[in-house]
Length: 490
RNA sequence: CGGGGUGUAGCGCAGUUGGUAGCGCGCUACGUUCGGGACGUAGAGGCCGCAAGUUCGAGUCUUGUCACCCCGACCA
Image (tube, rainbow, N blue to C red):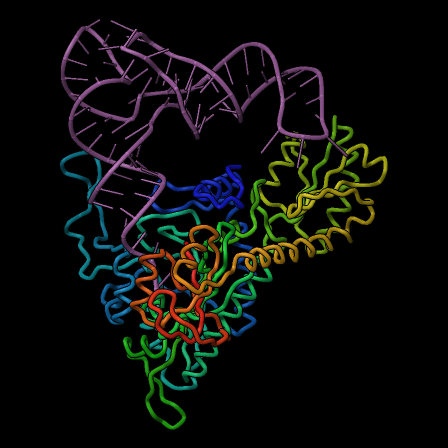
């Protein structure tokens, strides 16, 4: 493994790539900026999907699917939206190829030019609001609480596996409401869902807050977000929930008749999290031995490695293990019994690289004493347990690992959250300690922009329930009412 | 689009003053091993990114070209 994350040196990127590669999560594809998610990486995504999907259903949402292609004209209807996304859109101009009359290959048939170009969705607000227009006439049609699991394309200049790729997988919720208040409640509710998911499943503490106007989603009135701190001290936006006001309703002319028989524009929200969360998971927990997965999202929670010299011993161990595997399975614990012919030492390393939370090793010595060696991935501790107690102990251990990972990350975040009162202090922290910095800001977009330019740090969010305190802006010295959360970020 | 770098076996790399291609990992077979990435022996695997030029001869020199990577610009 490249280098300890605690050094926070510039080769953190190298270290990150190493983990992605060695844990067999993903690789760059032949298509520039696009990523191949390998089976093990995808299995983590599936765990995330199923947990999130259940949370969405529990809050009254349903799944639907909308087109991959969006007519160009839809985009220009919401001015801010088009401005925000125009620079990174993939555009479809033709619908046919033909044999090249001058040579072997095929060329785009110039006669097959589309009358109106199609955009490959970078996000689906426009196509969905064009659709919602037909679904909504009266207040009785509201609310609409839809989610879609989809892929989107944003033609980024520079990409990094999971964190920023040209195509990525995500879910996007799009809701329509009769009142502003109801839409605001929805926006906050879904942010809470994301925060719960991050903390309970990913074991990753997050700061909930609202984005400054500069950092707001293109087309939103407000953007709420969860911000997490990675082990190199950089912040990562892990999820967003947008209050879209009536912007899209107005752009797509979506009105409804209220109880008083008056026409009103519909209120909207949208919210999403993506495969970027896998990147967040890697950068939150991994150590120098590789990936560390929280049990709640680990595709394999327990791996059992037999240690044997010959077929006969293997048979003996397998017979002993079989009932344990069954028992763990009935407790909904995902177990892999790896009786592959690879050497045990090789397997130990392999499963550590892959972040499997618990490893059980069992050999002739253990058979004799009716015991097993149990190793936990988070602390790398090994213990010898009575074989008959394993079923109970493993279950406890998984819970304990989940909690320990959360506690560890929370402690890391707390130790790396600081306050700065002067510009010098602010820069010093960013340069030498990184992490989150609470500092006063005069509240103007111009100052925010200047700080970004000079310090390469952005306002990650203005936390909810942020304590109000008088102070002076670290850059301009103008009066400020509160500290906001700054960091350098991904 | 700027600045830098790299293209040689599946992967990671070496290749001297130009002389016709090698190492490590991995792979295959057999044997010995097996409690923290084992070892031995024998194998398989190459249009040296592509094209043109210089030369008796090019992985190596020249020119062109393509691709990828890193640093910026970009990133709701």
